[in-house]
Length: 239
Image (tube, rainbow, N blue to C red):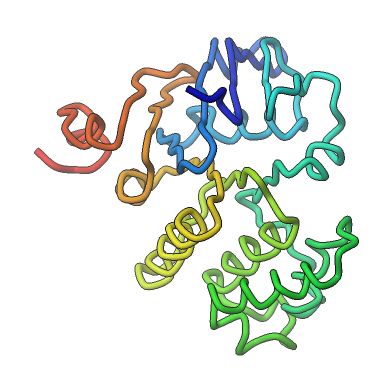
């Protein structure tokens, strides 16, 4: 049994007197898609922000054997732990191509960068069709594809996605899901997926955790979640 690639133990985050995360623990193995589901405000984004080094926390976070407590966010990125936020954080007046290249700004192997550009364009043909289009003029779904593509240009070992399907049309959600499965199957990418869209997470994740009011209420495999009556009734709408 190999050690987890990303491990969170007894994670606590406070915003003033508010206890936002209460003893969160989870471990993610190399090459798996791990889903974290729960309602809006449950603590999913706070957890990702802590892992990325954006908020202070108590507890431990280990990435590839390294304790991240003293590692700065920019070094976390350089080490291959890449965070694609809910806000997407695109450069609005940059073209699709320019935004993608910004994701590769720390990389020195230009041949590898070119290979990854073509990989992103293959994953998302809409981006290929719009290479010269400014990001702000694109639809929400196209912007989400661009945000994921730019994150991939950073050459992640672990890709953290916060609400990648929020507000998107079903056809775009399908495209995003297909891309994640391709990245897992062909590139062996490890993905931490935080989603309100429980159906999407259950469709694509190997293992999952359910967060409610800052605490993990349930963790298990895809099949265990699918068969859980509470999850089915409260989050999937199946009775």
